[in-house]
Image (cartoon, rainbow over all chains, first blue to last red; front, top):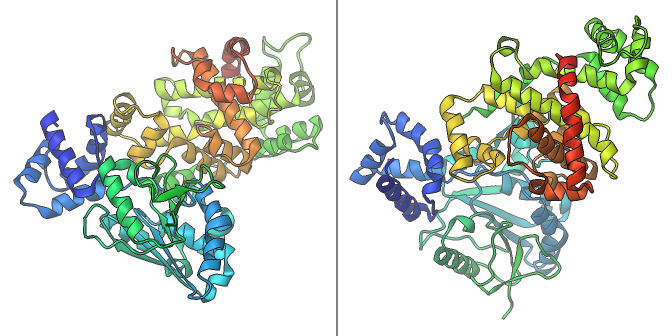
Length: 273
Length: 282
């Protein structure tokens, strides 16, 4: 791949997904896109970029974004946000929503589904009183492939070993060969949808709790501001936002605030007023 | 890039650890055992018995008359040394495949590094004021066992991508594995430990040996800090990374209350004992 070809590829990816990559990530492009080029009968990445430049293959663009945006995830990733969800966020929402008995949770960029399923299991385990509430967990991702995997809810031994307590594995999964399948009771709690965060008119779900973790980190500042603003529009008071450990709303959208009692949890609250 | 189910399948296909080793590791983890327990366990394994006698009578061990029984040999070497001998000999069989014993520099190098790490981890018990769990030697020996399985499933192209991720992408080797393969050698090592039925303490210490702060169990965290420092010492001894220094592992050194002088002492001791240990486990 020449520098010019890489730049074309990086620009294409940014326009399609908001993700910025620089030349140091050329190895990642090679790792994820060379197999796609081979599947298409193309000799190398240069040939693939030429096809992309010709602009005649919309499916190719979709497949590239699909492969480049699939990222590592795990059950109960970083654990503290889930502890915060259980100990602070849900209890305060239970009180506020006691009348309408509805709760809306959004897991954005859910990849292969570990985050929304973790939320679902956590709610089942810790809040049996929600059994007669309307609890909507909407999980979205840009990648169709990731969503297919998420809906299947079938995980390798390596994936269930990442962060999933053994009692929850036994309780909510069924073994199938060398894989583990999530039980219908949990799978049915999650509504998976395709959603591209950077498309201006994409329909953000309303959320009392939004998990948008390790997403903004890939976006440039203006795009972060845009996503947070649109997210804010879909959140009422009280609502809570979880970001990744290296992400923040500070100096980007001051309508969110860090909760003093919950430092280093990645939990933000929509400010009143 | 790599088939995760194939890795799981390959793990499940690994032969179990010898019963004698499993029994000895269980003894070592418990508070209630005697040297007779170790002798009884070793006596059920003919190859191990022969190895114990051989080592007890080797030049490094001979101080008086030759010993001829397992009991005498175990008394001379000490029960914990016998357990390490049993473990080291068994693990070598998994880490250095017979067909490559003489000519695969990578597997031999990794085995050498693992033994050095185990020795350093063990030695830290006497150098650190912090209480070091008894499993340190075993975790040191096994910390990179996942790397063996992973490497055997990688082609040259993927190895090259991993190297570029480290050199050009400025990723740690672990982060490079996660980014390119969506799996890393530490979690694969833990999977192997689980497959063998090793205690969770050992499996989790392997899983988090590059990320001690991710471990919730404080004993596991201590073991991970031990492995971090032991690995640094081992690399310095085997000359793997000239730039490795105690300053790259400040947090783990602080956790174990070690200073630069102690680290140098650790390296010196490992250097003195490495060749003997390698010979004993071969």
